Amino acid sequence: MARGRQDASLDAPKGLRTSVLPRRDRVDQSDRFGRFTEWIARAMGTPWFVLGLTIFVAAWMLWNTLAPNSWRFDSAALGFIALTLVLSLQASYAAPLILLAQNRQDDRDRVQIEQDRQRAERNLADTEYLAREVVALRLAVKDMATKDFIRAELRALLEDLERGEPDDGGRARA
Image (tube, rainbow, N blue to C red):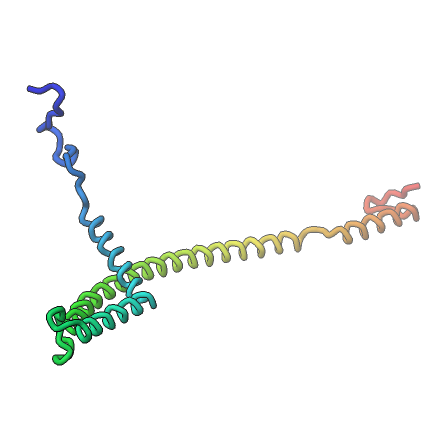
């Protein structure tokens, strides 16, 4: 037995064993493909793509029209059949990729809408709580004596004391 070699233990579950090559999950692969489809959809929606495709088609047509007959690979007399097939192939791959990217965007939008709904519910609950607290504070403040009321009462007591009128206890003050 080689001592430097890591021995695979049969008593450990298979999931805990380390492998030589890193294992890639299926979710990671689908996410990578989804990002690729979004990149394709974004790239095809740019003016640069349309300009590049126009230049490609123009170069194809010029080459197959002006080049010597032995260098041509698509016949202008037959309506550029190979060019039509290439563009059809590009369109047949582009449409599903764009739809996949759109589906991923719809999923993201659905998640965002759900998060917005939950945030709105929390905001509504917070607003209702704060409204109840404000009403409770208003009711508590309504029963409290104001500064003007206390001053008026103190003035009345001071006037009573100055006049020597009896207070509520019936005793006269000098």
